[in-house]
Length: 435
Image 1 (tube, one colour):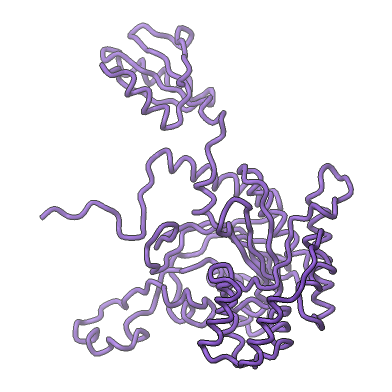
Image 2: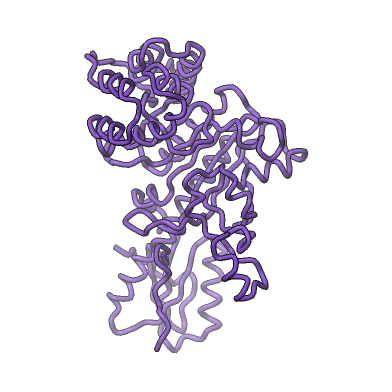
């Protein structure tokens, strides 16, 4: 029986046109992030099992692909079947944040006091494959380590919005919240501390099941009934329209009374900084054009977040295009002391389907359609001269179905072609546009 030829479930092959679009997107993201002062690093695709399962990765740890220890005998595998720690010592990374924390702990002495990192690389999770969810996918992360002020959040948001704009994805907003405000809201509503985790899990489903669905699920879970009543009343409180989507007034209107003044002030300052940075040509920022939107119920599932959290929203899409937040406690797990850190990740597999190659990308890509009697020395000489001019060149033998050939190379990103005969010279080539 012939071996299967399809890629493993949840993993994909990419044809040349798809790969070209992906590389264009990756190149644009890298260029914008680099322009904002970030430096790219690379970490191994494999990390120690104990590190990947240390509680830093939340539910992603359950989806890690683990690697069997070397030289295990069948008898040892059977004997340790119920104990993964005896069977595995390594695993494929399921995100880029845990490797970054390990990287920083390893190389801290060689890095600047405030380190701005780019990581663009594949990660692996044992997802249930479905539309938009894959077992291998690319993450595009930027992180700032060592900066405790909201300057870090501001830089990350501006760089990320800049990358999306360069890709032609405009109209995005950034939903923002703070884990400290979330916990404060739960405390204000009367939820006991030992119920916070499961309450947040349910609130995180708000976009999918709605307010009444959240209340019903909390009641089904047996969460403190008085607190659930308070949450239901908070959901249904009378509200007036707020013209400003962000700022101290908008934040306080969206929260119960008694919100932490210091945290509200931090978010307000962050909003003003982002508005100033996104204003055009140095003109005073329009206070009503702030891309930030305060969302008091934004949770983001990773338990390691300690401060501001954010997600990219687009008015035409029902899903986020990326997200991140502050995780000041994670690196301390490796160093024994906390180090301030905040990161933002673009959902690459989601944004790459929204873009096209620039219209001029094919202008310098040409095809030489040659007769079969043209000597190879002539063909490679012509090709070398065109390549030296900075053009992308492909050689194609003339076939009877010329239209099919031209359609194929046009789909591959070439913009023009010329016929080549045995006596052709560079000067005699006549290029015609590929429509």
